[in-house]
Image (cartoon, rainbow, N blue to C red; front, side, top):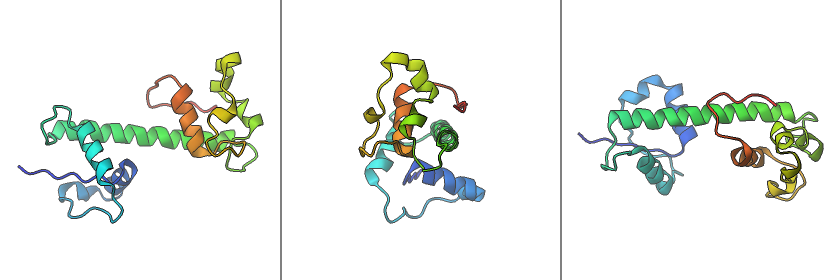
Length: 147
């Protein structure tokens, strides 16, 4: 049986199926114009646990569940970011940074904001905040507690 899996991005795939439940029964006919083949190949390889070159139904379910969990974690972190951004400038400023639970818990060994400030503007945008959490947070279950 031939199986086709086209993944243009985990979020895109999740949104597509969640938005159109019957789509799972129809084969994919084409990839979005700007799909990245390397990303799709990497996703397929990650889901192909037995390295057989095809996805079993269980491998697909496991991969899909991982995407769902990652999407939920990111949504939780986005909500958390909004709460932390008390001055509503769409960034975490130095004063807000010092209130982060992860930074408080790290104490004197806490990295400075500049460690995660990749664009060097003196504050953290959402993507920089996500990198901070990925680096400093212990591996957790799906629940991310607000700071």
